Length: 304
Image 1 (cartoon, rainbow, N blue to C red):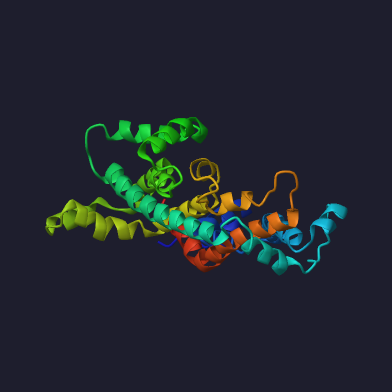
Image 2 (cartoon, rainbow, N blue to C red; image 1 turned 90 degrees about the vertical axis):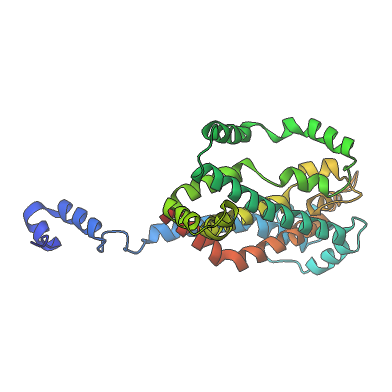
């Protein structure tokens, strides 16, 4: 016997029961309904709040130092000096193009290594059974509670003993894997990768490494893409450790932008032009990878 329709439920049990039945069936009152105007207003305000700081930096970058000194709150219309200020940044003494190359190398290498090692560790923690697994995972997660600043001094001593100070390897090696990446991939693979697929691969004669490469890694692709994207952004914008271990001789892009500040005078137009230029690659990256990012978020939500 088929279940009664929503109108029948409304007549017999009231509107509340009818709405509950509609949500259960995925009707107009369920998850398929379109968001209201309040949702769009909130999203619009969030977008404006996100774009406003970047646009403010662009307004300062398109102005002159004299105009900024006379008008702390600039006009909403750009002043037309942006490309002139960008040219000053590119022709300055901060090794801008070297800094861009260093940032690309560091961000790409750390992103790929974090994705690979975190996925490998996540596969081990979520699908393999070995002694001390839970305790080791708790220890890895607990390291995220230690502030980064506490490890700077011993880390710098190690890099100095190895002779890596001033070299990109001193920035790359500490970021090859992260505790957050291990936790992220462990949680995702726990629910996204069935044991049946692993057992089938093992029955077919695949080694554990081959099972990881051909079964676990494709299943972890949405979460791995998001982890790689966030790791790239974090490496691109990292300032504290590269500033300490690299200095001005071999800077990354955030360090180079900081070097635009003079000792007694700060040219805000020049500094903001450097900040805007350093953010442009990230904006392009998010535009290119936006669809994959949303797909990864949605698929991860469904898997979880």
